[in-house]
Length: 385
Image 1 (cartoon, rainbow, N blue to C red):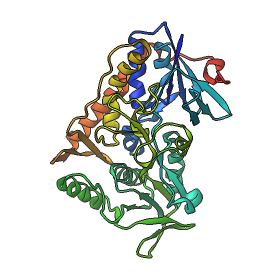
Image 2 (spheres, rainbow, N blue to C red):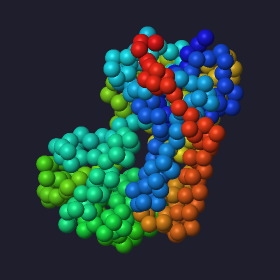
Image 3 (cartoon, helix red, strand yellow):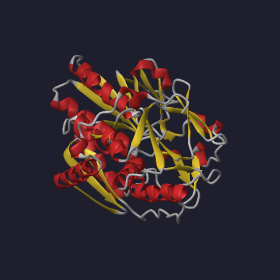
Image 4 (cartoon, rainbow, N blue to C red):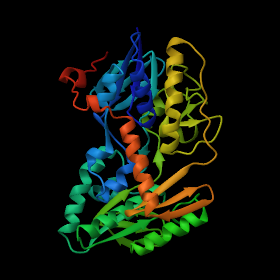
């Protein structure tokens, strides 16, 4: 029996597990490696911060999916791999061998410029840690007059987090202030000018100070590139992504910035038994934006290709759309839409985003197995198997 190892429970692997659940394999051993039994959905994080959702509404129970797919869960985090020996290394010096490996573990937040902030620094990833930390931050803001929260990162994540945090402070009657450090080009580089204008107006209405400067972490907050010291009680890092450093020793051929180089099938260009999807990889045949939208759409293609690799069959190619719809949450139940050069805003767009996000959660949730549990041995096994 061949072993398929799924490293990570990201957007693409949710589709893989769902495909396997629809026709549970009897000739393949499926192992899912994940640091948590729940997959938090990043698209609903701003809504959760704003208080529109509970955490339970923003996450998917991987146990139900895994059980339906006849997959065994191993709790752990990948810290290395040897592509030549067909194995991955987990925390605790555990090793797992594979016949086919698929990685969907995302990327890391690049906090190299902010590390001097020490305990004040909170990267938005991993999401599990952020979900645990945010209630403490909000409580601290409620108990300190003039609390200063800085969000570093001018992308969609940084903008949404800043607006969500400001809304949460207002709703909780905390006396706080939000700063958004967005580098010289400003927020939402690459989006249409109309989208940038609409979001700038939302930031202004929320009284969020936008700093078009680079920032470096200090013991007291952030030192801006013009020499200004920006005090901060907490710094949320929504900065650029970087590939896990252990990939450099994996033996895989890497592409730009150290990500796994894959073809249109999301297959490693150097090791045909390794696949990768999401932020951890980079296509060599075309340009694909690092977005959860593409990870979701590529999931069914990845599922078909994994089965084709194990059983034989024709591979499929994921062809990204020329443009995608992005809905940016603005703290309150209000959103800005971006689709190529077109944009719009309003409460109706937030409700559209809400329906889309809730539908995504339902798609990968099995009500009949929501209370399914795994034994301790099944959840924590993984000793050099």
